[in-house]
Image 1 (cartoon, rainbow, N blue to C red):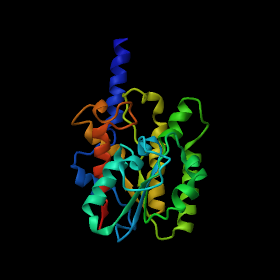
Image 2: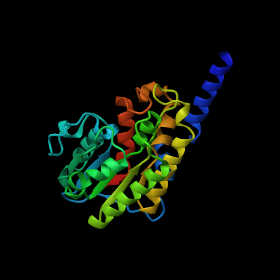
Image 3: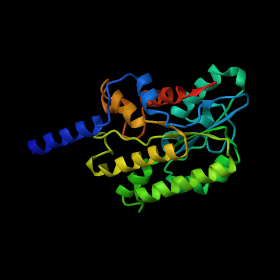
Image 4: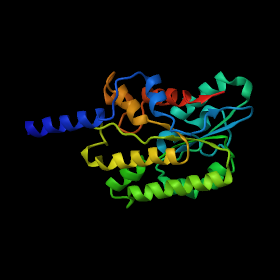
Length: 254
């Protein structure tokens, strides 16, 4: 039993730190964030910013309210923190910040509601964080997805978006998980790495900014344990949400 526990601890340590580089947050972002040829996320007057994704983005928002720039519609997570910072910092721009994340969503479920929850809003900057449910629900036996389905559905979604909104600036957020914290165990790996790789390659294909959230969390757990940043290995604590918001804000300028 002791041997098994030691092996498990070794797996968790190696998995969590596998992508870590010993640099500061600004260096992490400048080194890994923007693929060659990607567009800068420059804000303009009256711009619309839209956060999309699953429960990490949803974070308890009021889905019955279709307004913007208030805590109820932005939830209690990174989207609210990042949105609040944007509208305070760039008050003269009269930004409109929306959150349309929906708990439990996978890529195909984004597609099912995309006209209403994205294209009709006409964002100037569109941020998407999706992928953890595409593997998590599969592991729980509730979904028969593969990384190929994830990749193809994601590409189709972005092609559809570019066709409708040719000038939209895209931010693709890396799906992340913290090994050894409740829901995230060795069954996730190495398969989950392929979803992260797919997200990064899709960002490069569409010249989108890529936020390397896994590497950012890997750096964070050198400062405090995983449960400080996420309660179940997937959903951020307040500290984790602030970590994500700060990384997000750092790639958007006026």
